[in-house]
Image (cartoon, rainbow, N blue to C red; front, side):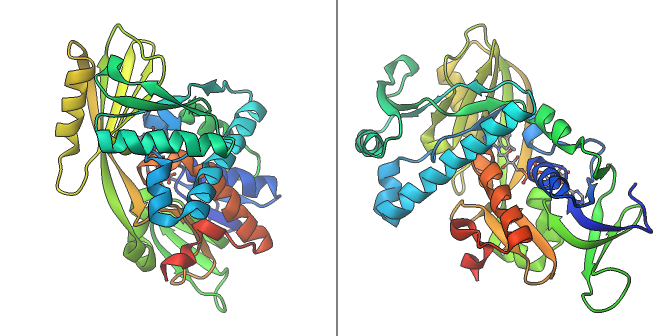
Length: 354
Ligand SMILES: Cc1cc2nc3c(=O)[nH]c(=O)nc-3n(C[C@H](O)[C@H](O)[C@H](O)COP(=O)(O)OP(=O)(O)OC[C@H]3O[C@@H](n4cnc5c(N)ncnc54)[C@H](O)[C@@H]3O)c2cc1C
């Protein structure tokens, strides 16, 4: 447990990927950081899933362009490119393997196939390596292959990030309340945990879907989204991760272990959809385990980075959604620039929701 007499420069609530990344960057900026994690181990969701950090969005570039305009579509894809660059640099610094697997986004619908065809040409024109592939081997019509997507061991990375002399990690330390009192008291922030009080000058709320319990404002701009996952044993390996149904279902294999994840469209059971896809992709595969996790999602599926209006001095990266690994690294980078230099987080700013 962190000291209850010391005043930490920053308290980070949650030791998932976002919390670990933020804590490390703050510690490297010579700040003393207390990381408070409610579970008995750090890692959060990313440490329990086969993690694919995607280049771009799971939806066709052409669909995003039609909805938001070309400039915005391009900015969104470039953010995920920057995210991959930060991730690869970090893995290199930490001496961890970089598995550049690429990915294949598949569709069975002719309308989407048209959009992917258009997208491939648009992406190539932007200098983003993307090619059209035949999807019939998998029982689909067409796919878009990108080469830069990275599969990495998030559990290893998170443990490594937290191993810094300026970071004090407390597990079994669920934060129940944050009180901000800028003008009075011992420190600007008091954090009430299950087993004591922690004082800090600032905080980062990185509690994933559970952050809404600590900030009323976050509760109005993000909502929890259920993601189901099944692990299967299948002697056949996948040469590349498959992204199906515009990212609602993902299939990733590490050797003969397949992990399939899925989240539902409104009113749809994600487990039923997942089982249906597993039945057609690998009908003979044996299901080994199943689990469910909750992610926080913003309405536009982009992360929210900013200071919480209801808790002065408390910053957040939230609303990462079911494709959080494609944003987490660049979002935390923007958070640190905001906390240290006051820079505007741009596209990901929490202020866009007010
Ligand atoms: C099954 C599944 C598969 C996925 N696959 C992919 C994928 O392939 N690619 C991809 O990009 N994304 C994927 N995601 C999404 C991705 O894992 C998340 O977006 C990302 O990990 C969120 O990270 P986070 O740090 O914000 O939150 P979390 O990982 O949820 O971390 C929050 C941490 O805070 C702790 N905590 C919560 N409340 C408190 C409290 N009050 N006090 C202290 N600690 C607290 C939690 O225990 C947890 O450790 C998947 C998600 C699931 C569920």
